[in-house]
Image (cartoon, rainbow, N blue to C red; front, side, top):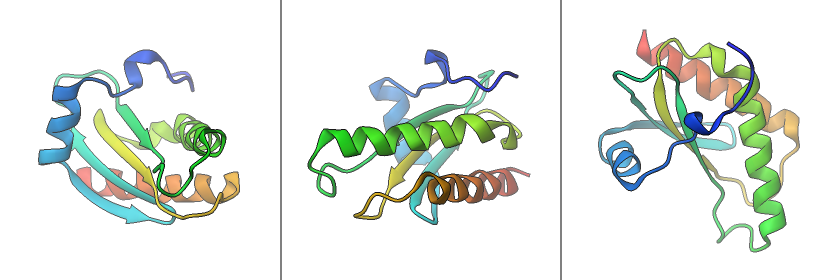
Length: 117
């Protein structure tokens, strides 16, 4: 599979998000908290990225962090063995460099993959 992030790989819709929040399992790794739910019958994993407005008042910083999280996921999404819906929440109150976010994403995806085996 190509390392792209298409519209079909974005988690959207109130029903899908509510289901993930209610039935999903979660954890934390590095600078990211996550919640995931196995997506039966889907061909691709879907993600949702959240950066709290409480921590970052300026949209420029929130958007920068969301771009970094999406890019680090895009490059490593092959680590997931089955399609899952995942919510990523950025937790620190400062902007971390891309390398730190990439390392946290590696930890998250490995942890989810380990739980699914």
